[in-house]
Image (cartoon, rainbow, N blue to C red):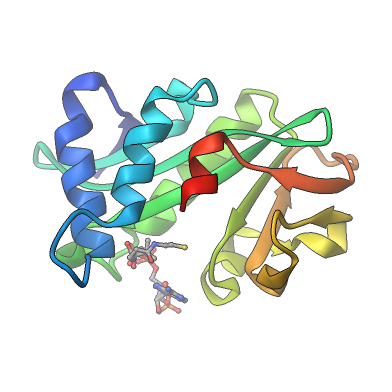
Length: 169
Ligand SMILES: CC(C)(COP(=O)(O)OP(=O)(O)OC[C@H]1O[C@@H](n2cnc3c(N)ncnc32)[C@H](O)[C@@H]1OP(=O)(O)O)[C@@H](O)C(=O)NCCC(=O)NCCS
């Protein structure tokens, strides 16, 4: 399995994996796929932090971090993360997470924030963002809003703001 940045040519396959991973009760495109399309066009898009997993030439997973902010301090917002339903439970998501964390750290980023299941993200070092002094965009998210410091030092304190397309989710 190869983890690498996506290119323009990969986007249809990436959107297909994201659509199938999240599914949609109505059979249409899930909101996460629509949001990813918007993130690709957003000023917060960071090409080196949009990674796919590839096996035998097929896209089997994708993760993206985009520019977010804690006050005036730049931060990363992670998501969506998606793995082909036929390939879940085999370490693809973990490889994507480790890849994007390493890429963020190499790029000098200070912190990654995300909304998700603590049972999944704790294994990568994410903790309740409130324990780091970071507030969720919506306080009702509670322990599901998590953060990981990359630089070692205190990153910033205050309310986190995602790239604009997250507001439509
Ligand atoms: C969540 C997801 C990305 C995980 O990818 P994956 O390749 O299946 O994950 P891995 O193989 O690396 O890890 C599997 C482990 O994660 C756990 N896990 C998977 N999804 C989970 C979830 N939603 N909540 C908690 N744990 C979860 C599995 O139980 C398994 O645990 P174990 O290692 O203790 O047995 C994938 O299941 C997926 O695409 N789901 C649909 C989309 C989604 O929910 N994305 C995340 C939004 S926050």
